[in-house]
Image 1 (spheres, rainbow, N blue to C red):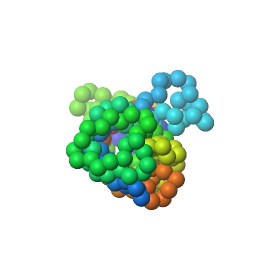
Image 2 (spheres, helix red, strand yellow; image 1 turned 180 degrees about the vertical axis):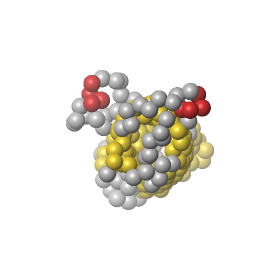
Image 3 (cartoon, rainbow, N blue to C red; image 1 turned 135 degrees about the vertical axis):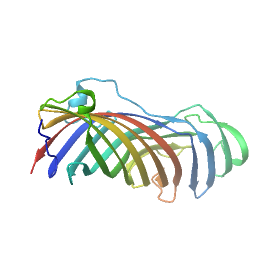
Length: 251
């Protein structure tokens, strides 16, 4: 069977993800407070599967992945994409707090490794529209179907692996103390990642792909209120599972 050449082809895909996150220390800073919450738990927020997944005005409601790329050779691709994850701090968990609050709230005080519960009147904090990792990836692409007896011209099984880096452009939904809720996009930091996956290409131009990706995110400048002097900072690792559908074509 003659091998199909990929060199010079463009590709595009769209799909969905599930993500998990390591615990994170989150520091909040403002004119009248500077405190750190330790080992804060967070989770993703998947949307139940409905036909809204395909509605043009609602396609960002699920946790989505979109990417466009180019085959530099038969085996190497470069691409740019957005991993639209969702990150939600779990409410009512108990964590340790260190620092000081002097903002005219019921939570004012000096804290030294004290316990505090993340009630809604103290903090709501999430990147739900979303934790947007805008990144460039370099990946290797190898056909492996012949190892397991897949030699059909219309079906190719491939393995892909590589790494990426980019910026975090979250829309952070934050409500701290009695301050007005903040919910706007803001460049907040950077991330790096590595991953591997399986790709099934059929009829030369269409494919379905599933990836596992592990990464590190550092966000030193998260907007938390309408006051530009208020901010949060955090870093954590993530593990992402994806299923995407795409096409590749000659240019």
